[in-house]
Image 1 (spheres, rainbow, N blue to C red):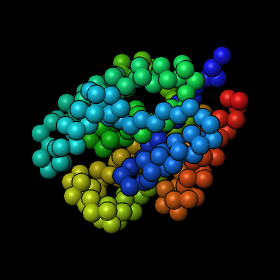
Image 2: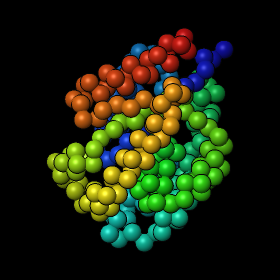
Image 3: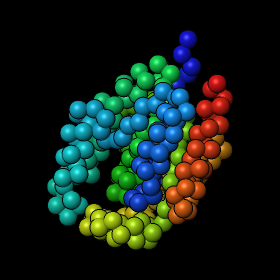
Amino acid sequence: MNKKGLFFVFEGGEGGGKSTVQKWLAESLIAAGYNVLSLREPGATALGEAIRSLIMSLTPKEQSASPLTELFLFQAARAELVPRIKEALKRGKIVLLDRFTPSTVAYQGYGKEMDLGLIEQTSQLATGGLKPNLTLLFDIPPKVSLERARARGQLDRFEGEGLDFHHRVRQGYLTQAQKNENSGKWVVIDATLPLETVQEQALKSLQKLLDERE
């Protein structure tokens, strides 16, 4: 009989290192003998990757899609991915996902100031009610994000939305974390700390649930 699968989501603003930490965790867990499926949103399916390419090809200054259109694109990619996640969990896999519904709340809801009720409704439709066992939020102030974007030569992408946008996104994430602070379902990690420290904190957060699964 398969052990129950676990679903971990990695969230945060630009430059927080969540994707780097997710990759490191996937490699570490696989080396430890876990059956891991590491995914990203949008993406991880043919349709999802096509939607990702479309969205990424439009820089903010050239953005022709309305916020509503963008919301539906993200939710379409999510609806396509969720069955794959559910199947993996059914098979007892450890699923690591770069972005999920909290990103939509933070970026579309707070960043682009869309109706949060609409976002909740469309997210429910896209996910069928699927919830992660744990969400890790890699929190980073927009000023630090800007410095990291400059160092990576990705300043255009960051500045295209403006600093105020990224402040709203961060607030959206922190608001969600605060609402869930007593649930045991969210962990906030200071992403300004050294990468090794961030990785250790992330692994420690996952390990508790992994140990309970044994």
